[in-house]
Length: 105
Image (cartoon, rainbow, N blue to C red; front, side, top):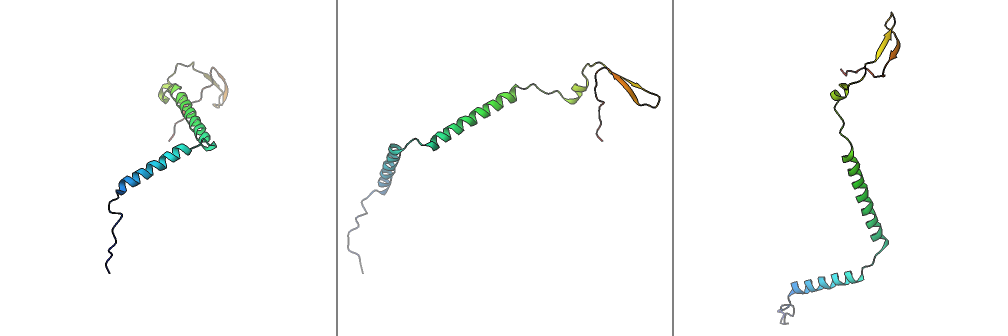
């Protein structure tokens, strides 16, 4: 059985129809949009994130450089004097209380 009806969809440019529908939908969305509490919360969270990140970066790059361990041990400090008894026990210490260098291994 052959269909002798005319094809009415043949002369329609479907790309233009879809583009027009998309433009109409976008225009209605932009016209009907409202400022809700979610928008306000998103903006506030973004601002808080920017403030926290910029504060962290300002503090991080504002810190002075920490010298390495060899430079820390070579500082010009006054030597402390430890008084020992006959058995090698410490009786007293005069001067700054600096710990001895601990070796690992």
